Image (cartoon, rainbow, N blue to C red; front, side, top):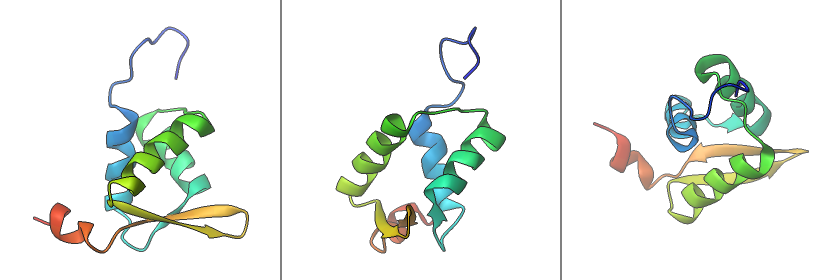
Length: 85
């Protein structure tokens, strides 16, 4: 986020969800951070991102797997029906 901006144009949780929905095969944590920066202009901290991911995981919207040194984030199977239209 630029120093002179107080508020983001799009909330972090919304941008994260849009990226995850666009990648049904899953996305790594580092790729998610890159896409947030490139597509939405959002620079986030790791704790801030983890907070969003944890809320989505506890709500049953995503699953998070530890793969190597990173996390693989996927839309949860039960969430496909909720978000498909």
